[in-house]
Image (tube, rainbow, N blue to C red; front, top):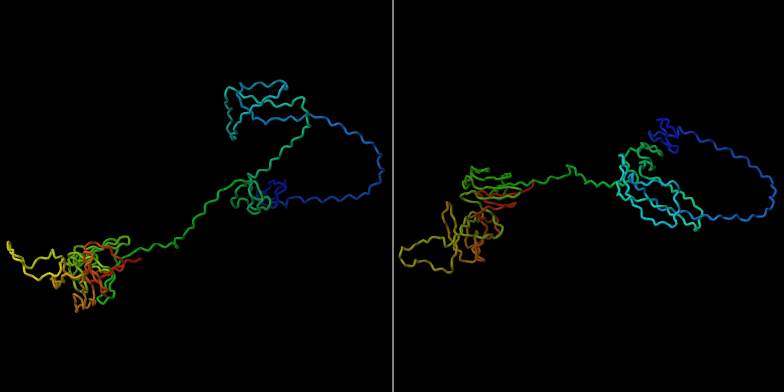
Length: 432
């Protein structure tokens, strides 16, 4: 053993560094003794040859009985003290015939515990230990061969490897005996003990790298008569009322607006508008042919039209009750179902055109209904066509568009253009 010069603890001779403090043990280890001087080489003296002696006969090899093969050791049977038979006084007599061995009961090993072990309880029929098998007297006995017990290999359990040099050390040592490195610097798994691999952690994204999803916002932009953009107003979440003096957004100088004209709803990026019971209504620009019904109103340029069903149009002349005289009038070329009426200022009816042809065109010039003094109307602005037993309003690629009055709430898309009162508005939905 080597005494550490730093902490005074004992260490084995093969260690270079102290297991307790890590100090170098070579300073306190005694220097190896000098090798002894080689003895002088002596020349052998001549020796007379030995006399020739006749060889002796080989000695007789005694015949040894065969080794006694003992059966597999049977674990002892734990019995109550009253059932254990007394041991015989002398050695057991040799049986005349080899006894029949019965399989010994197998007892399950139980782990050791610090509590006192209680005797096992068995049935009243105890099992006696089997007698060892004896060799018959007439069998030859071979010389016994000594059995050398196998030396158990040192178990790797309870050992740990040095994180610096990899040498094995006992668990509990603080320093490696081979290199002096600290054994408790990092956790080391004992040899023979498997440790499940820890699951790989998900990459942590720094908050700065995460992009917050853009929040949609809505707005309306007023368009000037020349088409340029005017004032822009934000539309918050929830309901926004547009009117002359009772709304969230008021235009007090527009005489065509009702006090509470339209309601705009904006929720989760969806924009919707509905009429609040106004007098003049809301007009939306059409982007594809739209069906017309009796009472439908539409704008082309600055001209307002309404479609009427002939069944609802009152007669100009009504016969007296009981008079069977036929009313005089112009002959019909084809059956009439509807007509389009031009609405003048203050709601008076203007020009009336029957829808008795497949397509009725409206424009500034060269159309069935022409309005050459309207600067906001295109040459061929829109048309009313009859197909699939219905009337359809179609824009002919006009510059300022054709607008149809809404009769029920409608969804608005980004860039949708509406006429409310005398103002042209473009609604937008964008991400902030």
